[in-house]
Image 1 (tube, rainbow, N blue to C red):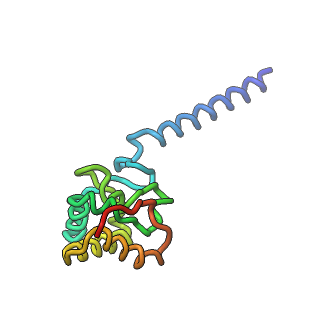
Image 2 (image 1 turned 120 degrees about the horizontal axis):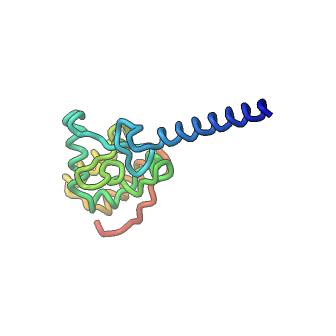
Image 3 (image 1 turned 135 degrees about the vertical axis):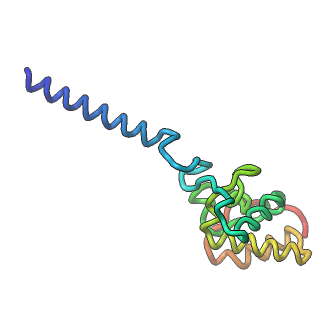
Length: 149
């Protein structure tokens, strides 16, 4: 009987250790960065970023209606549930996703949107150009077309 109790005690100890490890790993304090919409992105502190990155984030944040109409072609729609280019940059006003800071496709799309808008093109024309230019990179986010040029 004592061998059975030793094995049961060992099994209980191992089980408790596994549960404790899982609880600690999933606890909010287990990460050094705040979690966002997905475990694949974190909140970005813009004060640590170069001026050109900050300018791009602020440009997109200050034009949410435009950015909501532009799909992203980097694969983030499937991978982390983004719906449009705005999601790549902004979680909510003043809270930024780290996703676009490390993604060349997102950054290039945002810079193309800025250039074309500054040239006087409307959301529909910009969207059509982005679709034609960036579709070679992969599937877009599920961003419905709307508006006029």
